[in-house]
Structures are given as C-alpha cells and as structure tokens.
Length: 83
Image (cartoon, rainbow, N blue to C red; front, side, top):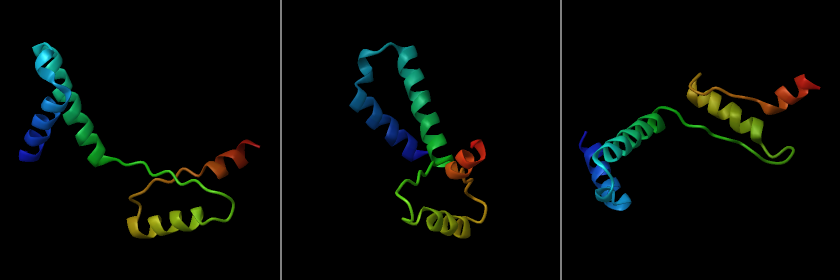
C-alpha cells in the first residue's frame, strides 16, 4: 500500500495534477492504480526473428519454467491454418 501512495505522489508531481479539476485528478489516480494492478497481473512477451533463430526453443523453455503459466499464440500455425 505504501508503494502505491509513493507512486501516486510521484505521479502527482510529474504530471502536475494541481492544475486539473478534482474529478480529473481522481480519475487519473484511479487509472494509474488500475494500470499498475493490470501490469502486475498480465504481461505480453512477443518473440520475433528470422528463420531458425530459436523462437520455438524459447517458447519451449518458457513453457517448461512456467508450467502452464503462459498462453502461447503461434502466429505461424495460424497463418498455416489460414492457407
């Protein structure tokens, strides 16, 4: 909780919310807390690269370490299915 308060104070200073209305300040505070919460709950990792550079190997390693913590969207498989 203290982390969120410190984060909000830094946000208040950096964005200079003192010039905004009370409703706008509360809305921006709520949005920043929401995005902080969502950011800690989900992360997107995009793997790109050329042919045979190890993308599939990295996906296999993440699956091993994560044990179903990662959802993999294989665009190569989707494109192959579309053809």
